[in-house]
Length: 259
Image (cartoon, rainbow, N blue to C red):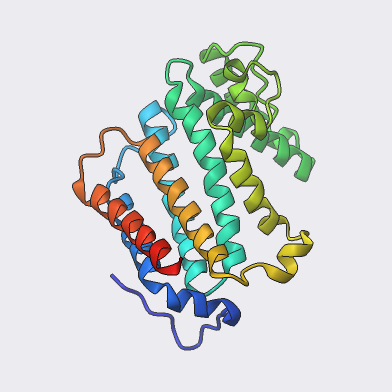
C-alpha cells in the first residue's frame, strides 16, 4: 500500500542531486522492485536468536530495513545518507557471511553473546549502575558456559566472535573482509569517506558526474543481493531472479548509451 507524505511534513530535498534522480528514475524504480521481491522471500515468522535459522532470518529482515532507508534517501537526493546506509549493509554482509557459513562453529550464537556482552558493558558504563544489570550479566554468563565457547574467543572485542575462524584474538573488520573477499574492504573504505565527511574532494566534488551516482546505485544493489543470497537458502521464487536480471540488463544498456 502506498503512503503519501502529509502536506505539513517538511523535507529537505538535495536539489543539486535531484536532476540525477529524475534522469535515471527508471533505474531507481528497478531498485525499488528488487527490494520488494527480496522482502517477499523472507519468512514472515521464525525470526529469533534461539536458533541458527532464526538468527539468519533476523539478519535478512534487518538488511532489507537498511535497504529501504537507503532507497528513500536516494529518492530525495540525499546521496550522502544513501552511501552511509550502504556502508552499514556492507558491514552486515561481511558479518552475515561468517554467521551463515559457520553453523557448526556456532558463530551465530557467539555473535549474539558478544553483542549482549557489549550492550551490558555499555549500559554499566553509561549509567554507573552495575547492580542494575547484574542479573543480565548472570544470564549472559550462563549462556556463555552452556555454549561451550573457547577461551580463545574474546567476546568483549567487536569481532572477537570470529576469532576461532580468523585465528586472531581480536580481529578487525579489515581481517574479516580479507577472509571473505579482499575487494570488499576497498568498497567499504570508499563508503567510509561519505560517512566520516572529512575528505576534501568529497566536500566539493561529491556527485558532480553521473557516474558517481551510478556507482553508488550499482554498489548498493550488489551488496543487497549478495546479503540476501547469502542468508537464505534455495531461493525458488523466480520473480527475484527475474528482477535481478532486469536491473543488471538495464545497467548494461545504460553503460552502452552513456559511452
